[in-house]
Image (cartoon, rainbow, N blue to C red; front, side, top):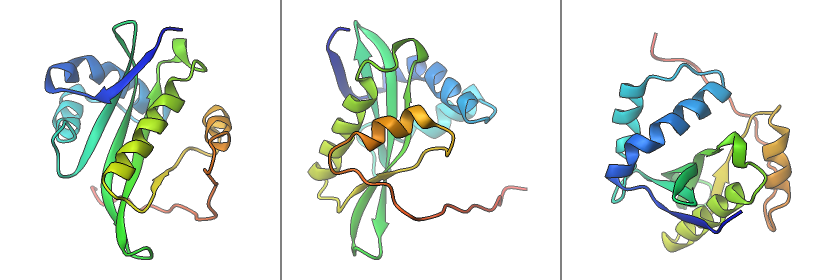
Length: 152
């Protein structure tokens, strides 16, 4: 595997990212919509007041992405960063690309002075959990996630 180059995704690169976003959504059972994704994810292009899209390139090709959301922690009374999305193309998984994206996300959280970086994964996503469990200092929390649909 060649060197992984992780950096913010620029506006001209958004179209190349959309297929990976669709693959990510499909992986989690969502129905991709290219135009909706273009509108939504374009607001995370650097510079943004709401978050940041990171891309991972290998051999000039986009191999993965992470979406960071800026949010606030009331318990820590500090800014925080949520890595809401982390996806690596199936054909290059296990080559360190996910780890490189996480390391860059940690660097970005530190650069922003955030109290912490947090993320979630599906209970059945064991491959992702193996990566997350191997990260120095990362710990699984005991919180349960709940949601209610409000767009009906």
